[in-house]
Image (cartoon, rainbow, N blue to C red; front, side, top):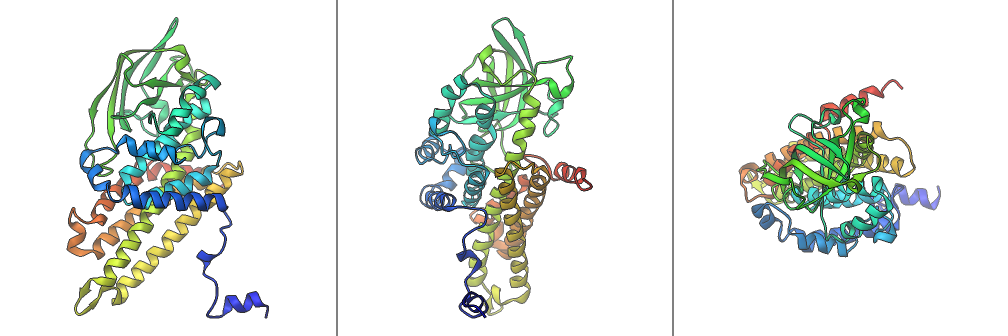
Length: 400
C-alpha cells in the first residue's frame, strides 16, 4: 500500500474539500474568498433594510465595482479581469449564499444578463463609451426582452423599432424588468424587420435613462426578491440615435439566445448557493432546537432528510461546475446548461421548503431568514426559462 493509499484509507484521510478543484484555479478561489468576505461585512448586516426599501443602494454596487466584482468577464482595457464562465459561476454562487436573492439578482442581471449585450454586440465605440462605467458600477444595466405576452418566446415580442433617417423610433412595453426602476442603461429588444423571418426580425438597442419617450410605467410588487427593483417599461415614440443599435440589425434573436446560456448557468449557480446556505442555517437550527427532550438533529428522519438534501445539492453544484467548465472550453453546453437550470431551480425550492418545515412555526415568521429564502426561491423555476421550457431543450437533445 502506498503512502497516498494509506492516507486515503485511514482515519487521517484528506477531505474532498481539502483537495484542489478540478474545475477552478487559484484565481477563482481568491475571487470566492473576496466575494464571501464582502457579503458577510457589507450585505448581510444591511440586506433586511434593502428588502424594506425595495432596491439595493447604488453606492453598494459602486463599491462592488471598485473591488472588481462587476467586470470579471470583461476586457482589461475597460477595467475587467478577463475571466470565463467559471468566474461568473463563483460570483453567482457566493451571491446566492448571501441569503438575499434580490441582492444577488440585482448584481447578476447587471454583470451577466444585461451588460453582456453591449460587451458582445457593441461596436468598439459603444464598448469604450459604456463598459468602463458598467465595470465600475457607476451605471447599472437592465435587459428588456420580456413582455406581457412574450418571455422565453423571444420571436413573439411586439415592441417595434422603426427606422427614420437618423434615428430608430421605439414603441411598445416591457414587463418584469430587473433593475428597471433604478437602472441607467437598458438593452432593449425590438422588432425591426416586419417582413423578415421571426428569427431575423429582432434587434437590440441600448437606451439610456431619461431618453424622451421612455419611462418606467410602474414599479412591480413581488412575492420574493424584494430588494430587487423590478419594473414595467413603456416606449412611446422613443427616438434613439442610429448608433444605439447593438450589432447588426436583425441579429438580436441570436444574441439573446446566445446569452440565455450564460444567464441560465449563473441562475443555477445562484440557486445552489442559496440551497447550501439554507441547509447550513437549518443544520445550526436543528442542532439547537429541542423537542421531546432532545435536539431535532437526534431525530433520525430529520438528519437523514438533511443528508439527502446535502447529496442533491452536491450533485447540482457539480453539474453547474461541469457546465461552466465545458463553456470555458468553447463546447456547446446547451444540453448541460438546460439541465442546470431545470434541476437547480427545482432543487432550491425543494431544499427551502424542507428547511422551512424543519424550522417549524419560526420558519413561517417574517423575522426568520428561511422564510425569506423560501419566497425568493420560488421564482427560480420561472425566471430565465421556466422548468418546462428547459426540459424541452433537454428532450430535443436526448437522442442526438
